[in-house]
Image 1 (spheres, rainbow over the protein chains, first blue to last red):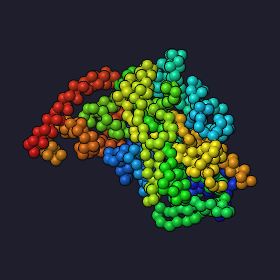
Image 2: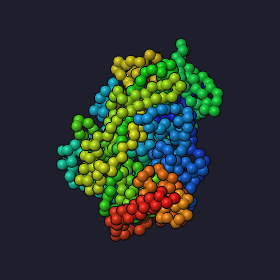
Image 3: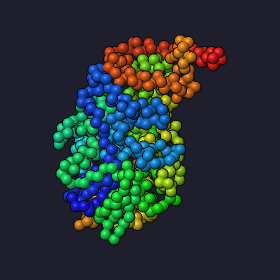
Image 4: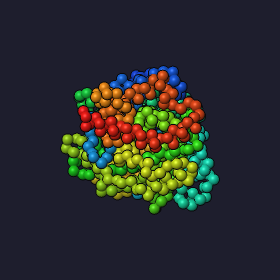
Length: 522
Length: 87
């Protein structure tokens, strides 16, 4: 690796890892903060089997009581609070401040970013999803194919093929829980009627392998998703980066907070500081920002010294709806059920497309939910024990379009200021609840919870790509308008968000962008 | 809280009544903290995880939940009222 690489990539999440993979063979340096998991002992067996034998205080609570943080202060996703997961969001508030009353984001400064704890849902953007993008589906298709081949995807071609796109190669889907199998059977029995009313149900597409692949073991149903990251069956950008680092195809430099860039006659200079003190300037021919939609926007605004402009801001707002399966009430818990998404439900209503993912709760800490039922805590504990094997969680995602109430600005003190105006649509929640009841689940819209915007962790749209871009916007090839060597490869570039996980499209788009950079570098 | 403990009050009923007023009260937080610690330990595993089929018992408990809630919440409310007016 030369001391001045061809390309600097900022960020090691899905976009950064895929950009590095697309540029292998060139000189690539990755800069990020790069928190990694602590040295706690890893669990290798099924969580429930371990729990009958060993004290898991280190895995559930942690030496710094990380696992108890939801008892006070702003709650964080149960998947991010376990001690083993703490590194994913560590220090983000101190290193990348963000102020907002209406937007509740979390940012990852970890090696692999949120790829350490994502739901692993992989859905292609369809022609309809790409309306407003200066891109045609056929421009992304070969890159989806390449990413899919690289990461490994399980699923099945079913009624959601038109919504999620065609995958040339799929591992068999994960085993369905009895609860979700019941919903799917019920749907299959009334498919025609459901489809007529704009409802489609099918198996989730996941970046989870169910067959051995290039040294990775298939998914083993250990219910550890809430306790520790790094199951090699679930794709994590660090898998790609580790591979590239072993091949000496990238120079990875953790411990840097990138602040701004400056174009020079011969390339780009990147200013970065150490969280512990000290700073440095890195130089390269090209710069790819892949730090996530919020941090890439911060770097662009700071580089322009712009504290006035309000950039657009997108996130998929969410509604969480529990579904009770009465036939399973009082059943023993099946320790081998997966807590990844099992089914997806697509609803076409009022000219928009909504998507809901159904999850089991295996592996989630029970104490987390104890105060949410109406009885005394001992009563809730008994009830919840019976209830958990009979409970699914529906996460309903709404599409997101730019609106004047959703914006981001960089204050002169370096803190991002965000606003996000959104109100849940009670008619859509009621409709989803009605569909689930028709499929045999018990739920009512009154049980729905609407986490504040920002909790979806699908941040996007801050530096949108346009055919004819303006200031702080991107050309279709990912290049930042007004620059000749600076590219943005993360979700910042999406002008709008359909109601589905955007990570697969971020990865495919990052790969597409590297094609142009490669050509430019000759 | 100390006085409630000293007087041997029904803490689970008091906690329920307090939680209805303020979900983030200290008694609820303390109880959840203890339950979180217990969940991590093998000796309490069967308190948190259903290991055997128990459908009849589960339905019976669910049916009893409504009157049980009314009883416990009323009891808790009385405990808190008495505590606030006689402390």
